[in-house]
Length: 46
Image (cartoon, rainbow, N blue to C red; front, top):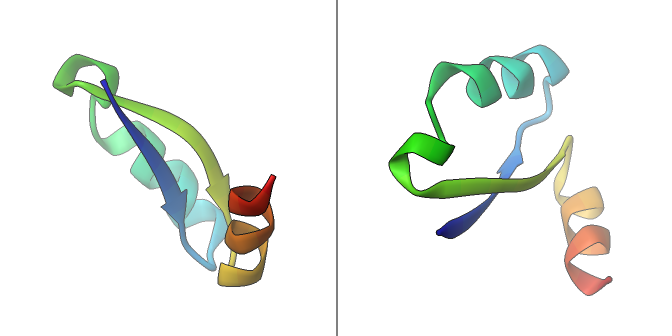
């Protein structure tokens, strides 16, 4: 399984992306979401 982090500055777009694709069925696991690069970097450091 490949881990995926979804990042977009629009919360509605993140929700749409999460529901658009059958991630698990295609071998992906969403480990989290972030609304900007700063939050992504903070998540990645921890």
